[in-house]
Length: 178
Image 1: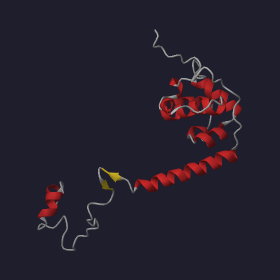
Image 2: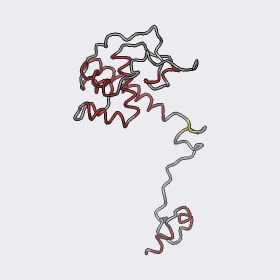
Image 3: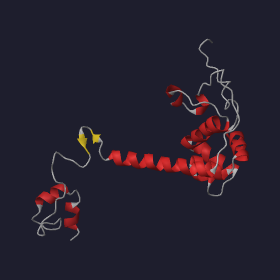
Image 4: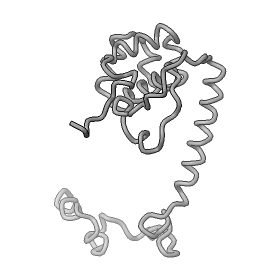
């Protein structure tokens, strides 16, 4: 019994997803939620019922909404890296931290955040081409040029291209269909 973790200080403890969503929609509205969370259920035909249905099926979106509830709506301080790896419902909120007033959010700030996210994603995508895959960088096969062009006389359909047929598993089938 001494190993039990007390989740009662977590504002999500005992509160359903529909209640959480209703509270933040009543305060911010669907437009702000879409601007900050970028979840499509808040943009196309938004309603509490359809959003709850989507969020219950989609774990990552539900966790994003719950984290928004904790850190924007309830204004709790950001968590440590070990707590960050847990879902928002499983996080332990220290007893000295109490929920505060909802943060003031607007569409202009959301647009700035979106620009920052786009820039980070572009930088990440740009770096992805330079990462190595098991010791070899992508697209680089020890200095070999990957732009091989077949001579005009070689083709899969020509009978004298035995090398090509060995590489093509459908070569025998192609020969039978002629």
